[in-house]
Length: 306
Image (cartoon, rainbow, N blue to C red):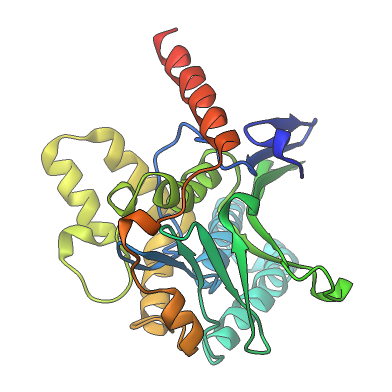
C-alpha cells in the first residue's frame, strides 16, 4: 500500500477494499469502538488491544443466528433436518470451542499510540518493541460477499499494519498487523477513526474505554435505553442491530471477564516513552499530511453541501 492509496477504494463483483492510511486521512465517519478495542486513553497515549473475543463473537453470532433461523423455519433440529443440524453443529462448534479455549490463554499486550510523539509502540512476542512513526502506519478494510441458497452474506476485516523500523530485520520479522473482524465498510471506518481521530484531533474525539465496570448508561443495553428516552431512534436502531445481529452485548461481557483490568506495557524504556512531554516538544504533522488532510476535509465538506 502506498501513500496515494489513502482515501481510495477498489470494488469487485463480490468484494470491496478501502484504503485509509498512509497517509491517515479523515474517512468522514465518526469514531465508534464497536469491538471494545480501546483499553486505555489519556492525554498522552491510546492503548489498542487485539484480543479477539469481541471479533470472534461478531463472526460466530450472525452465523449462529442464521443457522437457528434456517433450522427453526424448516422443521426444527430433528427429522429431515438431522443432517443439516449435524453440519451446523460441526461448522459452529469448532469456532465456539476455539473461543472457549482462548479464554484460558494470557491476554497479549496492547499496541500504544503516542499522540505527543506521533509514534506507535508495537510489542512483539519475544518481549521486544518496535517504535513506528504514526504516518507510516497502514490501514485498510476488506469486505467479501458470498451468495448462497439463503441469500447474500458479507464478512470483512480492518487491518492495521506496521513495518519494522530496523532495516536489517529478517524478512520474517519485517511486518506486524492487527486484524479486526468488524465487517468492513462503514464499520471498519468507524473503528479506524478511533485511532486516527485520537492521533490527529485528540482524546476528546474518541470514546472512553468500555472495559470493566462503568455506569449503566454506558453499557450496551443502557446506551440503547438512554437513546430511547432521548427519542434518538437512529441510535436505538443502530444499537439494536449491534446487539441482536452482531452479538456485541455477549462480546462485551466476555471481554470484561478477561480485560478488567487489561494488561499494561511495563518495560522501563516504554514507561519512559509514555510520559508526557512539554507542549513545545510535541511532534507535528508532516507538511504532506497537513495538505492532504486539508484537501480531504474540503472534499467531505463539499459532499455534505451537495
